[in-house]
Image: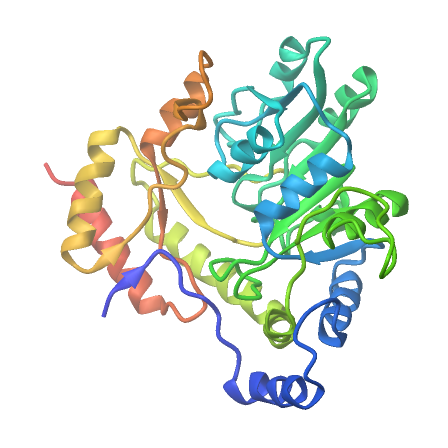
Length: 361
């Protein structure tokens, strides 16, 4: 059996089947159905946020957030994230301006942001990398000083709390991914969380072609809606989140115990954070060490992932920008298997192979 970097959490089939029976009887499959509304309500209760909208996916969430905030010109962002963070900026006809990361947190370095601000800058789009909070206070100070909007790509941040509240509570807008690879998923899906109710209303309009009523249009929009089937999966999975978080924490702690005294660097989590253990990344001494380790693990049917690789400064539509720290880290970072059904014995086995490889000679 292959051990992959992640596997989707699957709720009891009978739970999902119960929701399917209701969908079949109602014959209401999409267009703001009752399960979608129920999921939005329960997500707001779970996360203790006022404004949350369930969307097609996390990429559409970023694109709509950019459009709803009327952003144009330059948007400061991170080179160490999934490609959707940058591609969404370009898709919305804005220019991404890369600011390098902190080598410990792996998040955008606030100390370097101000140097990148120009008269064309309209926003900061930062990623909570692997669910680790950005320095939201420092970013907020900079944004207020320069009258910039703040969007957080919080694709990995579901379940993380900072200073006692959901990490999705920060910024003008936070976008989330509920893709099957995430610890909370709806198969495909995403969300936008807004601080301002009027902004949330605009996002709601934009996700539904700009409809303000059945016959009126209040804004330009796209099809960012999601279905009753996806909402049903979310409702099934949401009640399992506490157990999912607990299991991921224990597996991560097992990795750490196994890796004592090995030449491995770990991401440093921001203090005052209740972390969600979304991923288990390790930073190795060199790219050569990483490639050799990947080959060894693959031989034993273990498949970690180089994530994020390469640095987004290498994208063909991002020209003339560099970020030495992000470029270096991206060559040396590896995400190890971490999912709900991974056993402690499998973690120990993975670690034995890694230990053998890193201590040869």
